[in-house]
Each structure stands twice: as structure tokens, then as C-alpha cells.
Length: 211
Image (cartoon, rainbow, N blue to C red; front, side):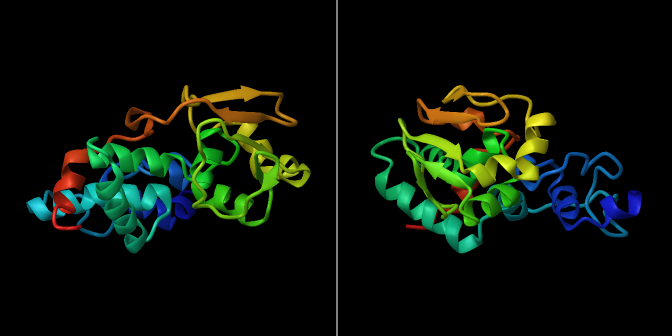
């Protein structure tokens, strides 16, 4: 069993960053080796300021399952549309409203990749209509549910039995039982809702040149 976990690429990512990212799924990435992967992962290294900022940005990339180009698009959009608010907070709110993340935060899937799979397979409905794009942005007032096939999905059933996260953000109202849960976004997600530690200022500094 140990060989399977230590060889897990998602575990390697989390060990390299020194933090567990719930969006990647199963917990325990840091239990055996709370340091970077590789032969020299446990040796103290001098890290540059750039590397520190880069790691902070990578937390967002890996947790939310994004590509660098996608995150840069979110940065540019947030800088243009934050309307006087700190653009980093505005961006986090939008990342939290991605449909695959919403399914994960509702504890309907054990990871964001598995939530993306449910969405891509047409197992998620928003306001009564199937939505198959993980990047779909859920709005306040939107109602989220699964299709009949979605409620039978083993990932959904396992997530109901053993949730990956200990709680669901207050911005969601939940109805129904495990056989057919339904949810409504009743408020915008807050930056404080992110289920891992991060330093938004370092991300701001990393992208300060992006316009």
C-alpha cells in the first residue's frame, strides 16, 4: 500500500509544495514524507523570493485543476472587473464558483478531477438543465443537482459516506438526503472558504506585470 501512495503523482505535487490540497483528492500526502519528493527532498534548501511566489501560485493551479494559461486569464479578467475590490479576492470568488469546484465543495465528489468527470459526463444540472462544462460559473440563486445517473455515481455515494472536507461553506443551502441532494448558492463564496492555507499577496506579487 505504501508504494501506491508514495508513487502517486498528486502526492508528489503536494509534497513538493509542502501542503495538502484537498482538490487533488485523497488525504495523507504529507503523512509519510512532509518534504519535497526526490532523494534530496528532506534537505534544507535556500528558496528564492521568486520560488516562494511561484509555489503560492501553483497551489491555485493544482488545487483548482487549471493550466497556467487559464489562471492568467482569470488574473486578467479580475484585474479588469474587480470594480475597486482587491483583484485577488475577486479572482478567488470566481474560482470557487467554477461548477467542478462547486460539486467538490458540496462533498458530492472526492476531488475536483472526479467532479470534472461528473460534469463532462452530463451528470450535473444547474437550474434544471444539464451543464457539461467544468468552467461554468455558478451564480447566486442558481440551483444545483445531479441527474439520476449522477446520484448513482459511486464517487457521489462514497463522498456522501466519507466526505473529503469536514464542512460545506455557508454560501450553500442544502436540501434532500444522500439519495438525491440538491443545493442552492445563496451567497458568494468568500476567500476565507478556501480549504487550504495560501498567501494571496504573494500571488499578487507574482502576477504584478500581467495586465
